[in-house]
Image 1 (cartoon, rainbow, N blue to C red):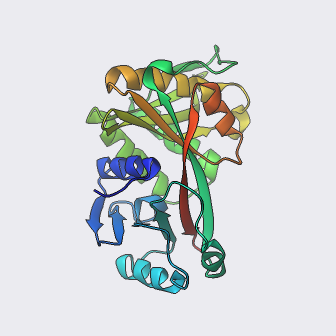
Image 2: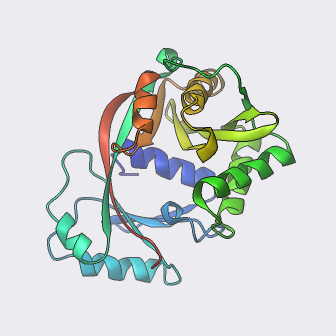
Length: 260
């Protein structure tokens, strides 16, 4: 596959693990997750290069042709340098440009955050109750999103049963208050997914502690020499990841329109 962006390489690898289908159209890649059509970044087009000037309507038409029932639009760009010159044009077409930071850390170098949490119990999600709590934590973080979170949890659980991933949770008094996943993305790499902390339990060192423990697990269980995580550069979580040993590696670019 021609994908060069480390962020999208690992994104596509994980979507395939979850059951996504891919189709190479030459100048773009289709990633489709039939079992979860409301998962924006499980149903998207990955453009091979930065879109040309005047092409916004054409890409919207292509997305609609590939995903005629979709209420969202999601376009990734396989680029890692500077943002292209067409962002304003795509914004005018109703798409929000996004730029994320791809961070990496050698598996052997992952370390604890400056203030690790020593009170919560950190362990992998395994039981039916654990996975139900995972869904409920997602609702507390994002609100009720219909079937999306239940379908997401089912896909996560399948990956763990295949031995290709693990979801870790932080529990206090038996209640799941933070979670994340780490998955084998192939080629000696492991990719983190969905770092989530209950709004009522933030600023307690939970996310950093989970990142550290999950990274140690991935290095041992998957033989991961490189750990990969993607973050919004404007959010405070990126400082947590850097505090555990991650360093900025690339930028990741995309355009999104959520259902109106």
